[in-house]
Length: 384
Ligand code: EPU
Image 1 (cartoon, helix red, strand yellow):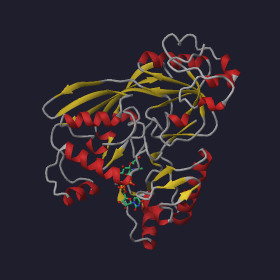
Image 2 (cartoon, rainbow, N blue to C red):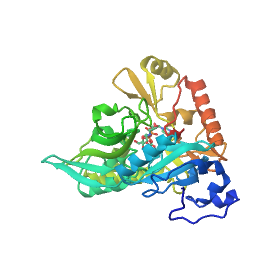
Image 3 (cartoon, helix red, strand yellow):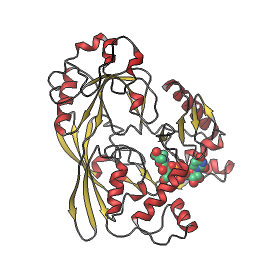
Image 4 (tube, helix red, strand yellow):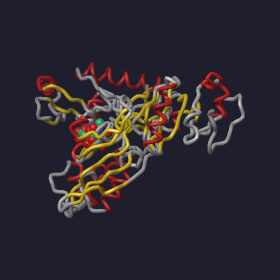
């Protein structure tokens, strides 16, 4: 049985009646779905049918998912995984939906919204405090909480949308910090072996915007909690250039987690569009990592090209700069606006769907490749 739970049953027969984000009524449009048997789990969980994904993703486009549910505990996770397997349905976990893109076609499985909460101090000594947070906690609320505790380590990652469980997946980073620097371990449900496992920092193979969770172990683990070790000492320079510039122009000489949080929040609000107002997924492309020989050749033609030494004969080049050089900054491509304040962000202004986004992405990445011989990579994950 699939039931409407807390939501009203729409009158069958019209797609317009799917406008309620968790509308159940659409089940009538696809009688085939009645053949799914969720009876074993529905005593405890609500399964919703034919849900428009754009209501759950900050880019606000894409088709529907055949099923959607929320998990609040490891027991919920175990139940939904067991049932999905019985029904041969794929699963995909989302947090705040700020780093996931949906395609136009219906997702044939179950989208799980991770709502597992919790905040606990698990260790405390003279120098550090270690916290364990539920994967469904809102990332910025946890950053605020740790800043209020005067702890340092994640304050430069203030105002990033999304949940704590999503942070290790792409090794979230901003303004000189990334999650891997304070990350101790996480607990996850391993859908291959049906057990809760603890993965250490080394196990996660963190890199620039990467981890096992979005590479070779994609979709294997459902993250339940994340443990971070934060510092009691005040943050010390050198700071990320944008932070230092702000401190200098505002005569800020007291460096605390709070002054860094306030500064980053201000800088971000100037450069990055608020997804609640202008639908976007943050940086749409990763910065490019290129070999030393290519950098050398490019610098002959573009001596002003910004680049950062990665320490392994490779260099990071800001993709925002590459896109800007190609003349796309501020342009509207297939309904997607290249953000005028930072060309790395694409804003869904009037895209008809994923196909428009894909067309804009191809136009930009082809032009960057043809101009600089650099292949750029999409940052948000795709639901597939
Ligand atoms: N730049 C340009 N033109 C642009 C954008 C950037 O010339 O349109 C150049 C500038 O030289 C600038 C440099 O790129 O100095 C770096 O720009 P910025 O500091 O704004 O950062 P970013 O490389 O564009 C990355 C992260 C952001 C993070 C900022 C700040 C990635 C994919 N993005 O962007 O993260 O907030 O650094 O640390 O690494 C996100 O992942 O969603 C995100 C917003």
